[in-house]
Image (tube, rainbow, N blue to C red; front, side, top):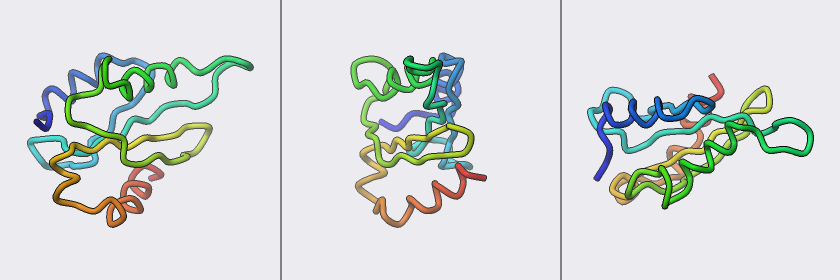
Length: 108
């Protein structure tokens, strides 16, 4: 089941070092969202936000049920983004048609 906007905000508040972005604006449900995180930490160590992003990616930790990783992008200033989509959205849409739109939104 796709998470609703309220649960999405609650999920975002759970993590302090990543930014969650709703890529399906204007909808009551959130079938597509991105995690923006800093890739690099101190020399030889992963960044804190990368570790938080890993928790969201992890099926057994904080990833909402039914969501899968659809795309990843390099952003500015050492940041990166991963897009997660709900399986029901994936059944109705083609990734190829949306990846460039997501990248443009995230780079803006």
